Length: 387
Ligand code: SAH
Ligand code: SF4
Image (cartoon, rainbow, N blue to C red; front, side, top):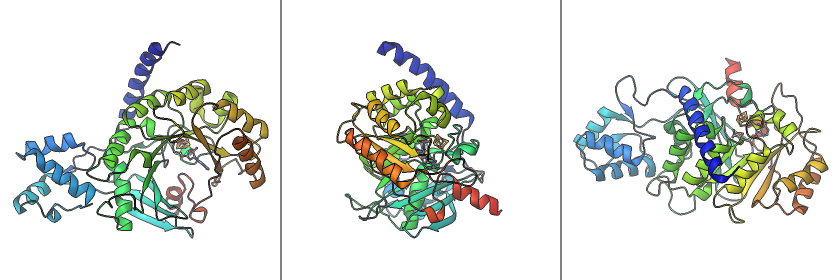
Protein backbone atom coordinates (compact mmCIF):
# COMPACT_ATOMS: atom_id res chain seq x y z
CA UNK A 1 0.00 0.00 0.00
CA UNK A 2 1.42 3.46 -0.85
CA UNK A 3 2.13 5.63 2.19
CA UNK A 4 -0.64 8.15 1.47
CA UNK A 5 -3.29 5.44 1.18
CA UNK A 6 -2.07 3.99 4.44
CA UNK A 7 -2.42 7.36 6.18
CA UNK A 8 -6.03 7.76 4.98
CA UNK A 9 -6.94 4.22 6.01
CA UNK A 10 -5.37 4.95 9.37
CA UNK A 11 -7.52 8.06 9.83
CA UNK A 12 -10.79 6.17 9.44
CA UNK A 13 -9.57 3.47 11.78
CA UNK A 14 -8.47 6.01 14.37
CA UNK A 15 -11.89 7.70 14.27
CA UNK A 16 -13.52 4.33 14.86
CA UNK A 17 -11.23 3.54 17.80
CA UNK A 18 -11.87 6.92 19.42
CA UNK A 19 -15.63 6.55 18.96
CA UNK A 20 -15.51 3.18 20.67
CA UNK A 21 -13.44 4.59 23.54
CA UNK A 22 -16.15 7.20 24.08
CA UNK A 23 -18.68 4.43 24.79
CA UNK A 24 -16.67 3.53 27.89
CA UNK A 25 -16.26 7.07 29.15
CA UNK A 26 -15.47 7.76 32.81
CA UNK A 27 -17.93 9.67 35.02
CA UNK A 28 -18.06 13.42 34.26
CA UNK A 29 -15.47 15.69 35.87
CA UNK A 30 -18.22 17.58 37.71
CA UNK A 31 -19.07 16.20 41.15
CA UNK A 32 -22.53 15.92 42.70
CA UNK A 33 -21.92 19.11 44.67
CA UNK A 34 -21.24 21.03 41.43
CA UNK A 35 -17.47 21.36 41.90
CA UNK A 36 -15.31 20.34 39.00
CA UNK A 37 -12.21 18.17 39.23
CA UNK A 38 -9.36 20.44 38.18
CA UNK A 39 -6.85 17.60 37.73
CA UNK A 40 -6.54 16.40 34.16
CA UNK A 41 -7.39 19.72 32.52
CA UNK A 42 -4.85 20.90 29.99
CA UNK A 43 -3.19 24.23 30.69
CA UNK A 44 -5.43 25.92 28.12
CA UNK A 45 -8.55 24.46 29.69
CA UNK A 46 -7.43 25.53 33.14
CA UNK A 47 -6.82 29.06 31.85
CA UNK A 48 -10.28 29.07 30.26
CA UNK A 49 -11.94 27.89 33.50
CA UNK A 50 -10.18 30.64 35.43
CA UNK A 51 -10.96 33.26 32.83
CA UNK A 52 -14.64 32.36 33.27
CA UNK A 53 -14.19 33.33 36.94
CA UNK A 54 -12.61 36.62 35.87
CA UNK A 55 -9.04 35.57 36.67
CA UNK A 56 -6.02 36.67 34.62
CA UNK A 57 -4.02 34.10 32.66
CA UNK A 58 -1.04 34.07 35.01
CA UNK A 59 -3.23 32.56 37.75
CA UNK A 60 -3.48 29.38 35.72
CA UNK A 61 0.27 29.09 35.79
CA UNK A 62 0.41 29.64 39.53
CA UNK A 63 -2.31 27.10 40.23
CA UNK A 64 -0.72 24.57 37.86
CA UNK A 65 2.48 24.93 39.84
CA UNK A 66 0.68 24.32 43.14
CA UNK A 67 -1.08 21.23 41.83
CA UNK A 68 1.65 19.56 39.81
CA UNK A 69 4.88 20.88 41.27
CA UNK A 70 3.95 21.28 44.93
CA UNK A 71 1.39 18.47 44.99
CA UNK A 72 -1.11 20.50 46.99
CA UNK A 73 -4.68 19.16 47.20
CA UNK A 74 -6.19 22.01 49.20
CA UNK A 75 -6.69 25.49 47.79
CA UNK A 76 -6.18 26.93 51.29
CA UNK A 77 -2.53 25.88 51.05
CA UNK A 78 -1.91 27.91 47.89
CA UNK A 79 -0.18 30.65 49.85
CA UNK A 80 0.55 32.89 46.86
CA UNK A 81 -3.19 33.38 46.34
CA UNK A 82 -5.36 35.79 48.33
CA UNK A 83 -7.78 34.18 50.80
CA UNK A 84 -10.78 35.33 48.80
CA UNK A 85 -9.49 33.66 45.67
CA UNK A 86 -8.68 30.47 47.56
CA UNK A 87 -12.28 30.35 48.74
CA UNK A 88 -13.65 31.09 45.29
CA UNK A 89 -11.58 28.26 43.80
CA UNK A 90 -12.66 25.85 46.54
CA UNK A 91 -16.29 26.62 45.74
CA UNK A 92 -15.85 25.80 42.07
CA UNK A 93 -13.15 23.15 41.95
CA UNK A 94 -11.78 20.05 43.63
CA UNK A 95 -8.26 18.61 43.35
CA UNK A 96 -9.08 14.93 43.30
CA UNK A 97 -6.89 11.94 44.03
CA UNK A 98 -7.84 8.31 43.73
CA UNK A 99 -8.45 6.78 47.15
CA UNK A 100 -5.97 4.17 48.36
CA UNK A 101 -7.95 1.18 49.57
CA UNK A 102 -5.16 -1.37 49.88
CA UNK A 103 -1.36 -1.27 49.89
CA UNK A 104 1.01 -4.19 49.95
CA UNK A 105 4.76 -4.08 49.96
CA UNK A 106 6.93 -6.92 48.73
CA UNK A 107 10.13 -8.04 50.38
CA UNK A 108 11.95 -6.56 47.36
CA UNK A 109 10.40 -3.12 47.91
CA UNK A 110 7.78 -3.36 45.17
CA UNK A 111 4.68 -1.63 46.45
CA UNK A 112 1.26 -2.26 45.04
CA UNK A 113 -1.67 0.10 45.51
CA UNK A 114 -5.30 -0.59 44.94
CA UNK A 115 -6.92 2.71 44.01
CA UNK A 116 -10.64 3.36 44.08
CA UNK A 117 -12.31 6.09 42.08
CA UNK A 118 -15.46 8.10 42.80
CA UNK A 119 -17.80 5.58 41.18
CA UNK A 120 -16.34 2.65 43.11
CA UNK A 121 -14.30 1.25 40.20
CA UNK A 122 -10.77 0.23 41.13
CA UNK A 123 -7.41 -0.35 39.47
CA UNK A 124 -3.99 -1.27 40.65
CA UNK A 125 -0.79 0.69 40.40
CA UNK A 126 2.64 -0.68 41.20
CA UNK A 127 5.81 1.10 42.25
CA UNK A 128 8.89 -0.90 41.27
CA UNK A 129 12.07 0.49 42.79
CA UNK A 130 15.35 0.01 40.99
CA UNK A 131 17.38 -2.55 42.88
CA UNK A 132 20.62 -0.60 42.60
CA UNK A 133 19.78 3.06 42.45
CA UNK A 134 17.50 5.44 44.30
CA UNK A 135 14.86 5.56 41.63
CA UNK A 136 12.00 3.53 40.27
CA UNK A 137 9.06 3.21 37.91
CA UNK A 138 5.40 3.67 38.62
CA UNK A 139 3.26 1.32 36.56
CA UNK A 140 -0.04 3.01 35.75
CA UNK A 141 -3.35 1.54 34.62
CA UNK A 142 -5.37 3.16 31.86
CA UNK A 143 -8.60 1.13 31.86
CA UNK A 144 -10.67 -0.86 34.34
CA UNK A 145 -10.37 -4.28 32.70
CA UNK A 146 -9.47 -4.69 29.03
CA UNK A 147 -11.27 -5.65 25.84
CA UNK A 148 -8.39 -7.58 24.39
CA UNK A 149 -8.35 -10.97 26.16
CA UNK A 150 -4.69 -11.90 25.71
CA UNK A 151 -4.60 -15.51 26.84
CA UNK A 152 -1.82 -15.24 29.40
CA UNK A 153 -3.01 -11.98 30.97
CA UNK A 154 -5.24 -11.85 33.99
CA UNK A 155 -6.59 -8.39 33.16
CA UNK A 156 -7.74 -9.93 29.88
CA UNK A 157 -10.22 -12.09 31.81
CA UNK A 158 -11.89 -8.98 33.23
CA UNK A 159 -14.33 -7.33 30.84
CA UNK A 160 -13.75 -3.65 30.22
CA UNK A 161 -15.79 -1.73 32.81
CA UNK A 162 -14.69 1.67 31.60
CA UNK A 163 -11.83 3.89 30.54
CA UNK A 164 -9.99 5.99 33.08
CA UNK A 165 -9.96 9.77 32.78
CA UNK A 166 -6.75 11.78 32.45
CA UNK A 167 -7.24 12.81 36.08
CA UNK A 168 -7.44 9.18 37.16
CA UNK A 169 -4.35 8.20 35.16
CA UNK A 170 -2.04 11.00 36.26
CA UNK A 171 -3.74 10.83 39.68
CA UNK A 172 -2.32 7.34 40.25
CA UNK A 173 1.17 8.79 39.88
CA UNK A 174 0.37 11.74 42.12
CA UNK A 175 -1.18 9.55 44.81
CA UNK A 176 1.87 7.26 44.70
CA UNK A 177 3.99 10.35 45.21
CA UNK A 178 1.82 11.36 48.16
CA UNK A 179 2.54 7.94 49.67
CA UNK A 180 6.30 8.38 49.27
CA UNK A 181 6.21 12.04 50.32
CA UNK A 182 7.84 13.05 47.05
CA UNK A 183 6.57 16.61 46.81
CA UNK A 184 7.44 19.18 45.67
CA UNK A 185 8.59 17.64 42.38
CA UNK A 186 12.33 17.22 42.84
CA UNK A 187 14.38 19.18 40.35
CA UNK A 188 16.91 17.37 38.22
CA UNK A 189 17.22 13.62 38.01
CA UNK A 190 17.27 12.59 41.66
CA UNK A 191 13.79 11.20 42.16
CA UNK A 192 12.47 8.10 43.81
CA UNK A 193 9.47 7.95 41.46
CA UNK A 194 11.59 8.67 38.40
CA UNK A 195 9.79 6.85 35.59
CA UNK A 196 6.28 6.11 34.37
CA UNK A 197 5.40 2.92 32.56
CA UNK A 198 1.92 2.59 31.09
CA UNK A 199 1.84 -1.15 31.62
CA UNK A 200 -0.83 -1.68 34.24
CA UNK A 201 -4.40 -2.73 33.55
CA UNK A 202 -5.78 -1.94 30.13
CA UNK A 203 -4.65 -1.01 26.66
CA UNK A 204 -3.48 2.63 26.68
CA UNK A 205 -3.99 3.07 22.93
CA UNK A 206 -7.65 2.09 23.28
CA UNK A 207 -7.99 5.00 25.70
CA UNK A 208 -5.71 7.26 23.78
CA UNK A 209 -7.07 10.72 24.46
CA UNK A 210 -7.11 10.43 28.26
CA UNK A 211 -3.75 8.69 28.25
CA UNK A 212 -2.19 11.35 26.01
CA UNK A 213 -3.52 14.12 28.20
CA UNK A 214 -2.17 12.44 31.36
CA UNK A 215 1.22 11.95 29.70
CA UNK A 216 1.31 15.56 28.55
CA UNK A 217 0.58 16.72 32.09
CA UNK A 218 3.34 14.49 33.47
CA UNK A 219 5.80 15.89 30.91
CA UNK A 220 4.94 19.56 31.44
CA UNK A 221 8.14 21.30 32.55
CA UNK A 222 6.42 23.49 35.13
CA UNK A 223 4.81 20.64 36.97
CA UNK A 224 5.75 17.00 37.31
CA UNK A 225 8.35 17.57 34.59
CA UNK A 226 9.20 13.99 33.69
CA UNK A 227 11.14 13.83 30.46
CA UNK A 228 9.66 11.78 27.62
CA UNK A 229 12.68 9.51 27.93
CA UNK A 230 11.36 8.46 31.32
CA UNK A 231 7.90 7.51 30.11
CA UNK A 232 7.17 4.22 28.35
CA UNK A 233 3.85 3.30 26.79
CA UNK A 234 3.18 -0.39 26.31
CA UNK A 235 0.78 -1.54 23.62
CA UNK A 236 -0.43 -4.88 22.41
CA UNK A 237 -0.19 -3.41 18.90
CA UNK A 238 -2.96 -0.93 18.10
CA UNK A 239 -1.25 0.04 14.86
CA UNK A 240 -3.16 3.20 13.81
CA UNK A 241 -2.78 4.73 17.26
CA UNK A 242 0.93 3.93 17.42
CA UNK A 243 1.42 6.46 14.63
CA UNK A 244 -0.48 9.11 16.54
CA UNK A 245 1.32 8.34 19.78
CA UNK A 246 4.66 8.73 18.02
CA UNK A 247 3.69 12.01 16.40
CA UNK A 248 2.08 13.61 19.45
CA UNK A 249 3.82 12.20 22.51
CA UNK A 250 7.13 10.75 21.37
CA UNK A 251 7.43 8.65 24.52
CA UNK A 252 9.31 5.36 24.56
CA UNK A 253 7.35 2.57 23.01
CA UNK A 254 7.07 -0.98 24.27
CA UNK A 255 5.32 -3.51 22.05
CA UNK A 256 3.87 -6.70 23.49
CA UNK A 257 5.03 -9.16 20.84
CA UNK A 258 4.95 -12.58 22.54
CA UNK A 259 4.92 -14.60 19.31
CA UNK A 260 6.75 -14.52 15.99
CA UNK A 261 4.14 -16.09 13.70
CA UNK A 262 0.66 -14.79 12.97
CA UNK A 263 -0.72 -18.22 13.71
CA UNK A 264 0.47 -18.23 17.33
CA UNK A 265 0.06 -14.50 17.91
CA UNK A 266 -3.56 -14.71 16.71
CA UNK A 267 -4.08 -17.07 19.64
CA UNK A 268 -2.04 -15.36 22.36
CA UNK A 269 -2.80 -11.74 21.46
CA UNK A 270 -6.11 -11.85 19.57
CA UNK A 271 -5.67 -8.23 18.43
CA UNK A 272 -3.17 -9.70 15.98
CA UNK A 273 -6.10 -10.82 13.82
CA UNK A 274 -6.85 -7.15 13.20
CA UNK A 275 -3.26 -5.88 13.00
CA UNK A 276 -1.05 -8.77 11.98
CA UNK A 277 2.70 -8.92 12.42
CA UNK A 278 3.63 -7.36 9.08
CA UNK A 279 1.56 -4.25 9.86
CA UNK A 280 2.82 -4.14 13.42
CA UNK A 281 6.44 -4.32 12.35
CA UNK A 282 5.87 -1.62 9.73
CA UNK A 283 4.40 0.64 12.45
CA UNK A 284 7.45 -0.01 14.64
CA UNK A 285 9.74 0.91 11.77
CA UNK A 286 7.82 4.17 11.32
CA UNK A 287 7.89 5.05 15.02
CA UNK A 288 9.65 8.40 15.19
CA UNK A 289 12.88 8.97 17.01
CA UNK A 290 13.80 5.33 17.30
CA UNK A 291 17.55 5.10 17.28
CA UNK A 292 20.17 3.23 19.18
CA UNK A 293 19.79 5.70 22.00
CA UNK A 294 16.00 5.30 21.99
CA UNK A 295 15.12 1.78 21.15
CA UNK A 296 11.72 0.17 20.91
CA UNK A 297 11.24 -2.48 23.58
CA UNK A 298 9.68 -5.74 22.44
CA UNK A 299 8.09 -7.55 25.35
CA UNK A 300 8.07 -11.28 25.11
CA UNK A 301 6.45 -13.35 27.84
CA UNK A 302 8.16 -16.72 28.10
CA UNK A 303 5.54 -19.48 28.08
CA UNK A 304 6.81 -22.97 28.64
CA UNK A 305 6.62 -25.04 25.45
CA UNK A 306 4.46 -22.42 23.70
CA UNK A 307 6.70 -19.68 22.28
CA UNK A 308 10.15 -20.37 23.76
CA UNK A 309 12.01 -22.57 21.24
CA UNK A 310 15.40 -21.86 19.66
CA UNK A 311 13.74 -21.60 16.25
CA UNK A 312 11.39 -18.93 17.58
CA UNK A 313 14.30 -16.98 19.03
CA UNK A 314 15.98 -17.01 15.60
CA UNK A 315 12.75 -15.97 13.90
CA UNK A 316 12.39 -13.14 16.41
CA UNK A 317 15.81 -11.81 15.42
CA UNK A 318 14.80 -11.94 11.76
CA UNK A 319 11.44 -10.29 12.37
CA UNK A 320 12.80 -7.25 14.19
CA UNK A 321 15.94 -7.03 12.06
CA UNK A 322 16.95 -3.42 11.39
CA UNK A 323 14.71 -1.91 14.08
CA UNK A 324 16.63 -0.15 16.88
CA UNK A 325 15.24 -2.43 19.56
CA UNK A 326 15.77 -4.50 22.65
CA UNK A 327 13.83 -7.54 23.73
CA UNK A 328 12.50 -7.77 27.26
CA UNK A 329 12.05 -11.41 28.17
CA UNK A 330 9.40 -11.71 30.85
CA UNK A 331 9.04 -14.97 32.75
CA UNK A 332 5.30 -15.69 32.70
CA UNK A 333 3.72 -14.65 35.97
CA UNK A 334 1.16 -17.35 36.76
CA UNK A 335 -2.25 -16.51 38.19
CA UNK A 336 -4.95 -18.78 39.57
CA UNK A 337 -6.64 -20.53 36.66
CA UNK A 338 -4.05 -19.62 34.00
CA UNK A 339 -3.27 -22.37 31.54
CA UNK A 340 0.43 -21.57 31.06
CA UNK A 341 3.61 -22.18 32.99
CA UNK A 342 6.71 -20.03 32.97
CA UNK A 343 9.57 -21.31 30.83
CA UNK A 344 12.36 -22.89 32.86
CA UNK A 345 15.30 -20.62 33.63
CA UNK A 346 17.65 -22.58 31.37
CA UNK A 347 15.29 -22.22 28.43
CA UNK A 348 15.00 -18.48 28.97
CA UNK A 349 18.79 -18.18 29.16
CA UNK A 350 19.21 -20.08 25.87
CA UNK A 351 16.51 -18.00 24.14
CA UNK A 352 18.15 -14.81 25.41
CA UNK A 353 21.55 -15.96 24.16
CA UNK A 354 20.23 -16.47 20.62
CA UNK A 355 18.60 -13.04 20.60
CA UNK A 356 21.86 -11.49 21.83
CA UNK A 357 23.88 -13.30 19.19
CA UNK A 358 21.43 -11.75 16.72
CA UNK A 359 22.57 -8.32 17.87
CA UNK A 360 19.82 -7.28 20.29
CA UNK A 361 20.00 -6.65 24.02
CA UNK A 362 17.77 -9.22 25.71
CA UNK A 363 17.41 -8.53 29.43
CA UNK A 364 15.38 -11.06 31.38
CA UNK A 365 12.97 -9.18 33.56
CA UNK A 366 13.55 -10.17 37.16
CA UNK A 367 10.30 -11.34 38.70
CA UNK A 368 9.36 -8.57 41.10
CA UNK A 369 6.83 -8.59 43.86
CA UNK A 370 5.91 -12.23 43.41
CA UNK A 371 5.05 -12.46 47.10
CA UNK A 372 2.36 -9.80 46.69
CA UNK A 373 0.98 -11.14 43.39
CA UNK A 374 2.30 -8.33 41.25
CA UNK A 375 1.12 -9.78 37.91
CA UNK A 376 -1.49 -7.85 35.97
CA UNK A 377 -4.85 -7.63 37.70
CA UNK A 378 -4.23 -9.88 40.67
CA UNK A 379 -4.50 -7.65 43.72
CA UNK A 380 -7.84 -6.37 42.61
CA UNK A 381 -9.19 -9.88 42.21
CA UNK A 382 -7.77 -11.01 45.52
CA UNK A 383 -9.48 -8.18 47.37
CA UNK A 384 -12.73 -8.76 45.50
CA UNK A 385 -12.75 -12.45 46.29
CA UNK A 386 -12.21 -11.68 49.97
CA UNK A 387 -15.30 -9.81 49.81
N1 SAH B 1 -2.19 -3.57 27.33
C1 SAH B 1 -0.83 -3.19 27.21
C2 SAH B 1 -0.22 -2.76 28.52
C3 SAH B 1 -0.59 -3.53 29.75
S1 SAH B 1 0.01 -5.19 29.86
C4 SAH B 1 -0.03 -4.32 26.59
O1 SAH B 1 -0.57 -5.41 26.42
O2 SAH B 1 1.13 -4.07 26.24
C5 SAH B 1 1.72 -4.92 30.25
C6 SAH B 1 2.63 -6.09 29.90
O3 SAH B 1 2.43 -7.18 30.81
C7 SAH B 1 2.38 -6.65 28.52
O4 SAH B 1 3.57 -6.88 27.82
C8 SAH B 1 1.70 -7.95 28.84
O5 SAH B 1 1.82 -8.81 27.76
C9 SAH B 1 2.40 -8.39 30.08
N2 SAH B 1 1.71 -9.42 30.85
C10 SAH B 1 0.39 -9.56 31.02
N3 SAH B 1 0.12 -10.64 31.79
C11 SAH B 1 1.29 -11.20 32.12
C12 SAH B 1 1.67 -12.32 32.91
N4 SAH B 1 0.77 -13.08 33.51
N5 SAH B 1 2.99 -12.60 33.02
C13 SAH B 1 3.91 -11.79 32.44
N6 SAH B 1 3.61 -10.73 31.68
C14 SAH B 1 2.32 -10.42 31.52
FE1 SF4 C 1 -5.14 -6.13 27.72
FE2 SF4 C 1 -2.45 -5.85 27.70
FE3 SF4 C 1 -3.63 -7.76 29.18
FE4 SF4 C 1 -3.62 -7.96 26.52
S1 SF4 C 1 -1.83 -7.98 27.87
S2 SF4 C 1 -5.39 -8.35 27.87
S3 SF4 C 1 -3.85 -5.83 25.92
S4 SF4 C 1 -3.84 -5.56 29.47
